Length: 217
Ligand code: AP5
Image 1 (cartoon, rainbow, N blue to C red):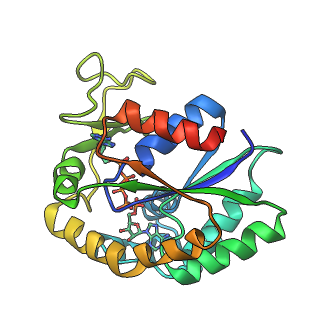
Image 2: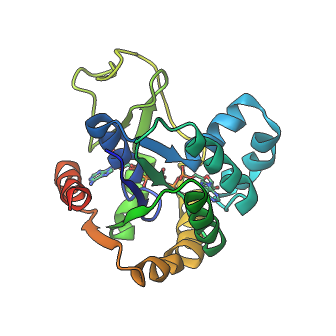
């Protein structure tokens, strides 16, 4: 599918979960700046070294760093492959840069999908999540468990990991950052008539179905 969409919502809203489903269903590419930064931290690159402490505190990494990462990833897309922006843009400056990055590549943003959630539920969602250490598929202690306990549904791996920033204190800082810097970018897209809202508190399958309806429209 060749549409470009932004998934927007606070930490734990389900952006990564739903992005993975769009990748599996449509061969779109998930562009998660969080995943890119974590890969840089793991590889010990200069970007990773600069980002680690900021991420551990739950604050935002600089606009220049994340926008450079997004530009590189967009250039690696296959012809006609749609992009799902997951966790980007997060500030007004990033939203402006994204406009430029897309225009330079003759791409158009089709939808900004806001996952509306009750913030009280997010700490539980985030503190209960984990991923397969081999393929990265996401799970949750309560909401999305592997079909065979201890075995990844996707790749059969047996090792799982949790993120260092998935603790209550850091999550609260991430939510504060979202309210202060990310939620205010919504009006930019509302003015263009491309914002759609989905009830992110519905179960995962219902959220997926609602997103599918939006991107098919
Ligand atoms: P990032 O990795 O982007 O984290 P985030 O935005 O805080 O979002 P999360 O990944 O925590 O949540 P999600 O919405 O993807 O939820 P998920 O689908 O996993 O960023 C991390 C850090 O990197 C930032 O703090 C910042 O420092 C830095 N950074 C990244 N991008 C940046 C940028 N652009 N600019 C500056 N800094 C940047 O779902 C959570 C759990 O809930 C899962 O276990 C899932 O199974 C479960 N779940 C999902 N949906 C449902 C549902 N409907 N019902 C029940 N359970 C559900």
